[in-house]
Image 1 (cartoon, protein in one colour):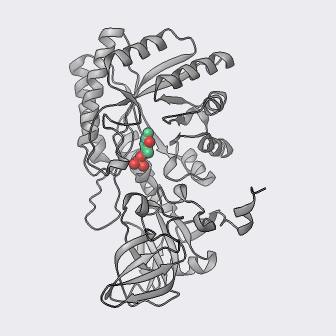
Image 2 (image 1 turned 90 degrees about the vertical axis):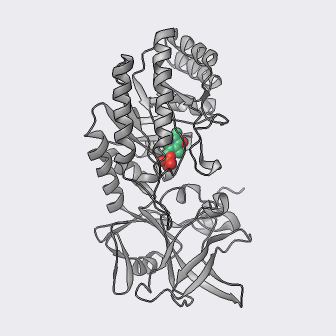
Image 3 (image 1 turned 180 degrees about the vertical axis):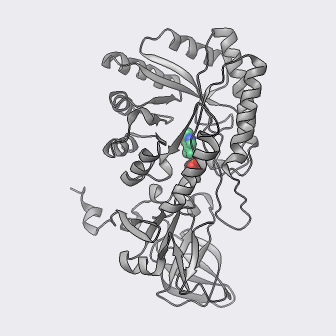
Length: 427
Ligand SMILES: *Cc1c(COP(=O)(O)O)cnc(C)c1O
């Protein structure tokens, strides 16, 4: 992981001393490195957008979405995926260009569809035909022409945790690859004056270290693209291949550079298009975790240290499952360092316990640490994705602030919730 080093025995991230940042903003605290986000965006540009023509990159905003994040992406020309009216609203409030927004979701409500069509989002990815009918009607009533993609379930098992695999046949997402169903949908859209089908979308899963699922899914999609051209005369102009590129969380993780995924996909695509006599469609990628995951850390203050002789030592922190539900939800594993003791040898193994009234609120089961004292600062790494965006107020814990760091500077981008915020909507 780049951009991490040690100065004065302290953990330095984005050029800032994390012990000082913890003091200044208090804990728990999300810290996001602009430097790492910039590196990832640079890699997307160099190894995808500039290397291959007719390509687009769109950030899956469910990983982490704030106004500042929208502004960064806007400046870089990266689009945004949204999956709800709330995410769309955030993008609108950040003045994000709507033609660069893709609206996803497996059960969009009528209100959300109206909001998206009125806002003129660039694409709606249609998950099912119930939704398609609503889009038709809304577009007609508003006199709009809506550009859509069909989300296809390619039936690929992506070898990741079953809760975060979305490409297999038995999935709540997407249109199953059944000819009668799909042909009927395409023919219906071909007759529509208010909906224009541009192509297809698939997303095979998340946190992938291998490119095989993408490549298998691409192969299935290429056959589909050829088949629908021959049978119903539909010419595919866009192919959205989703996200899912894995990142480093813990020892043993083996994340690959973006080009490991991109290059074989683009080569296969071009080869198959030549072989099948098809136009090469525009290719869209949707990384979420890959852009922000390693860019984020969470700072906590250590409180109680409870040694159960011969069993384990529980180390209590001032946050837990409300700010990071992933260990409780998916057995997600994290690594951490003691930000104020970077020079000391790691001589102990402890369990990092959250402060919620749940035995399952354990952030890290076995973490190697130096000798600890209450008041030490724990920095948990790779918390940039699906932490802030999944946070809750369980046990009425206020959600942490978010600070962006980079090149030695720091800036508050989300304020810490207050006790008043917690009851502000109570009547
Ligand atoms: C979640 C999601 C992504 C991004 O997944 P990551 O694993 O964060 O890259 C991309 N596309 C769709 C449709 C998604 O639902």
